[in-house]
Image (cartoon, rainbow, N blue to C red; front, side, top):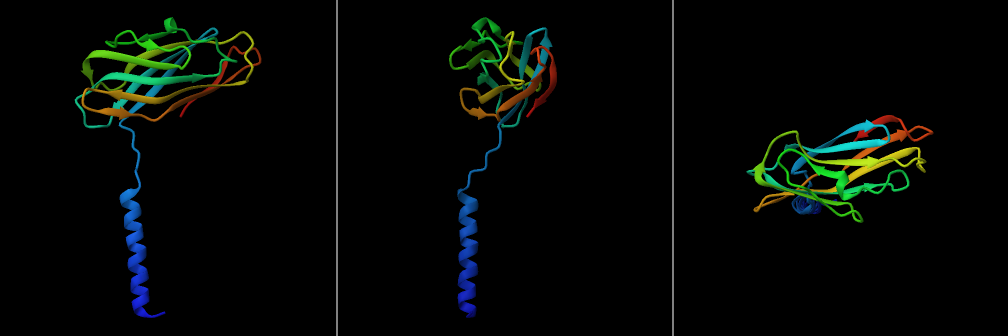
Length: 171
C-alpha cells in the first residue's frame, strides 16, 4: 500500500475513535444506595439508605424510587407498610406502581443515612422458591440538580414452607 493511503487510513481510524469517545455517554451514579434486610417471622423489613453522595452538591431534600416485587410471593405493600426514617417526612407511596417519594425540609448529605423502610409480608404459600425485591429508577434531588443512582436488587431463597431466608445478596 502507498504510504499516503496508509497515513489517510490511520488518520481516519484515529478520527473515528476520537468521535466515538466524544459522543459516547458514560453513566456514573451520582449517589450510592444500599439496603438492609431484617426478617421477622413472615415479614421482611427493608431499610433503604443513601450510602454516599458522589456528586458535588450541597445535599438533597427529595428522594424517589420504584419498588418491584412478585405479588405471588408477597402480600400487596400498602401505604402503611412504607415509613420514613430520620428527618425525612412521611413518604408518598403508590400501591399500584410501587413509586415512593420522600421529602425533607433541610438538605442532607449524610453518609449511610436511612431514608425509607418497607415491610413486605410473605404469603402463606409463595409460588416461587427464589424471591426478588428490586428498587429501580432511584433518584434524589435538590432545587438545582437531579441525581441518579443504580438499581438495587435483593435476591434470596425461601424454604419449602416459604419461611426462612437462605441467602441474601444485594447487587
